[in-house]
Image (cartoon, rainbow, N blue to C red; front, top):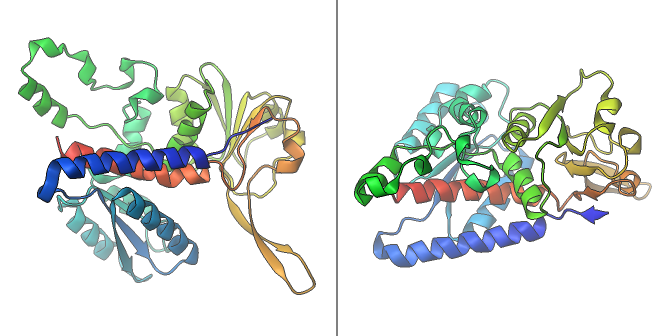
Length: 331
């Protein structure tokens, strides 16, 4: 059984981003503006604060900047959108995200759609998801051919254009950002040379944040994709028939070996914190995934651990998207 560890991949990505940013900083000199991410936090959700802290730490290491904007839980939708618009118009800002979840009175799609799609490094706006449906997204190495972009620079014969005209043309092209978790899953599969072409990939979970973007990316990689959810009939029959099973439902230990057949690849995206009793009056907090790890690891061909699998790659993928936006701003 192969353990698909995301931590080492994350560390390599971190060093690569740090190196590329330093190179640009040396080249730009006094005019250098670091890759800058604005994070809106609405209210004081403790889990959100932890996740934002991880992003700040990552940014500091690679040489990026994070502007953490805290707004009260009762902020109106119009006021939040006005704040977002201010940073949409700020050329020194390269990415904007709104930390989820949001208070119930705020509609997520209204808020994410207020973000300029060129700065939507979370990839959750309607424009970004539409580009994902069209297979028009960044990270060309993740797809097999030039037809995956409806606007491909490579489709033009460079010898017929002056260099400055090509540079100007490149500026008019935009490829969408893959949402961070889906991009993390893709990175994991790529790094371990797991080819999904023609493979039966089953995804449990259909959220806009995770399940649907993963499905779209797998389709772009020419996998045969099935999405399952709480209303799916015969779930175990479907999961057993898959080559790669990806779970993103946040139900600790839900998937045991009764869902599986031998030699499958298991990707666990469902990270949940649970209390485990260690004494009469003492509980221990533990991070668990959707797979019952001890039960399924002896039948799996490969599996991601929780923690240490997909999770570490999510933040790294977000900052890869930020760097892409930053790099585009230099063209």
